[in-house]
Amino acid sequence: MFVWVLAVHVLAGLTCVVSATGASLARKRAGAHPGWGRVYLGALAVVTGSAIAMTALRWPADVHLAAIAVVAAGLAGFGWRARRRHRPGWAARHAIGLGGSFAALLTGFYVDNGPRLPVWDRLPHATYWLLPPVVAAVLIRRALHRFTAGAGPRPPAAAPPAARPAPPQ
Image 1 (cartoon, rainbow, N blue to C red):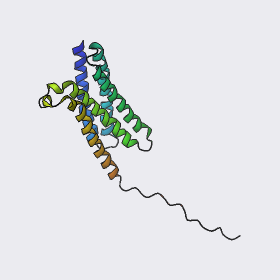
Image 2 (tube, rainbow, N blue to C red):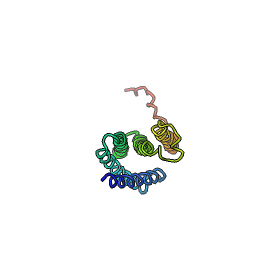
Image 3 (tube, one colour):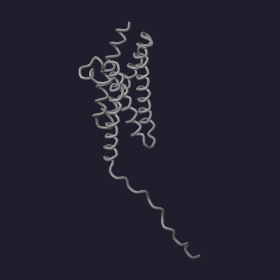
Image 4 (tube, rainbow, N blue to C red):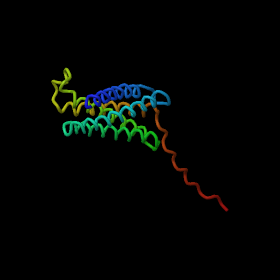
């Protein structure tokens, strides 16, 4: 049973990587970006569900992986909701939520597989936990900077009209 759940988990994880890459590289407008985003959210739901199922089958060995998956899903939900609500600052919250979600997804992968990967197997264990979120923070910050820089300078707030004396009566 575990092997079947693992196979689904791996396929969904690969789908997350491809769709997150597609969404991040697509222009931020209707069409490809939200299309890839929907694929990412669906695949992430499968990753989260399968991580919880694998944890139930191999309790407590994989409990940290289920926790990472739940964090990834929570961050994705935060980013998705920010986009849906369109409150001031939504774009930053959307990018932080979904970018952080992808960083959590990669963290789970490296924590579980890093010791068996070439080059990664030579790194200290803490690297598996720290490198994905640090790299993601740099990339998210860069994307937010480009997004706000692309919007052009913001006009200054309108000054209040000068006080005029009341006309004579």
